[in-house]
Image 1 (cartoon, helix red, strand yellow):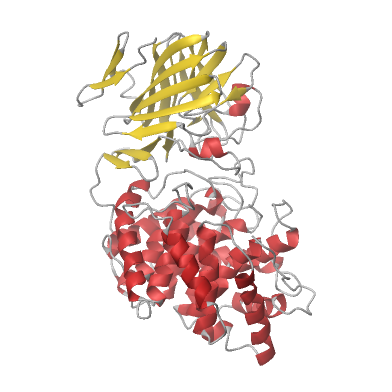
Image 2 (cartoon, one colour):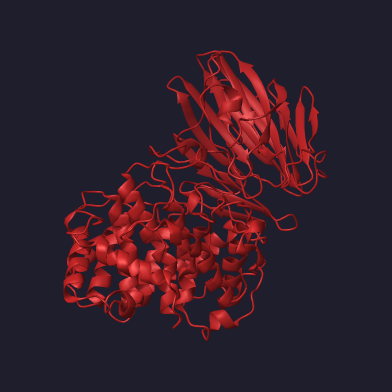
Length: 618
């Protein structure tokens, strides 16, 4: 479905009524997809790591992230709630054919249990009181299974916490010690400046705002009298975190595509929703209102709905190539967490204040906890996050593409590989890819060493045990510089890719201008331009046209790339990478770079010279 054909198209998304209507416009198309017993939503045929029956329970449950706050903040009846209440009765009844079942260790159903804890906290009069004695017993017994099984040692620790808080709220048995133990363990993930990692040595990305802080702020709100010390700690950490996280958003409402689980889309702004719910004010209510509503408006200007009005798996368009192994057809409805402010009534100050723009932000923000340096261009609404990479990795889908690229952009997005053969299938934007001449490329999967300074980012990585790459990134916008010093015992083909530029406009028209010369190449569209220039080390510039559906924002793209063959020994490659929005006015204004035997001196625009010392054995 084109968004312009959807009821959402006429929704201005400005008032509480608009946001409530948006929720209904998302939920109403679900009505034909409820199972006979109403305990499952059958939204598609694609599979996930867990069974279809669990995926159907997941889709049913995730709707509650929006539905429970809506019902908490209004006396309005909504007929879809009747379907859900019936589904909860049947899903937790062990004698019913749609019973959600006995859970196992590390079970996906424990993820989905969390929202029932929230619902018991927000709407006990609607989800608990209408149940018979037997139905209450079934519901409570089914939820209490979460205390009998381990969860993954990451943000999952909050799921038993929310469930137990909900059970406690309605007077049911709960595990106080489990809550305390899990809260203490989550504290061990805390880093500094409001940042956590998602588990020990885990990544710091959207799972921090839309999971750990989101749940922590719910805890802080509902437990502020009973556990004031911890509640205040969660609030103060969130306020500190917000000072960094605001840099992840552009003034047009878009946010940085980075990390995994991006199919949750507008969950990007759910942190601000939780901040409003918990009554913290790292920024004014007007600023936070603007962050939430602009993000929602941006998202519903993208092609994220199918022909039946259902949320799809993907990012800016339906896309299974970028998906996680745990993305089922119902998974995207986790985005409804952003509707948490609907739990606040129309009279709440949040709904009364005027929406405000972003405050004045610095052009550069160094955020060492998530290993990122942000460079913003407020005039063009372009933000770029430069990345050192990480000392650890995981086995999630496309980990290198989602966590190890040199740069991530809200305008150009990033790409994931379609297959393993060649540069077109690999779609290596913002990466250095290396091959032994067999057209199969390796990229950075983790960093052996890294360092973030005021002037540059350094990372050392090994695509093979006997190949060492030292990379220096000098952040900037629209230009940034990359220096690669490669020590190898192998003959290698290298490809240093710039940003990926979409080559079609919204009506499918290709209006691409290109420059391809030996030392530089540029791709230019009305929306922006991407290019790369070889500064040192040989090689040939080439525009690579990746396989379709590799980029998160645009289904067809071009990647300016420098291709070089290097011989055993130590080689030095220096390139300047360009990405500008709505213009190519700065294409000729390249930073100056001077290379000597042991030192590189770089002068960025209006900045002091930056010196990089090289390996003396070169």
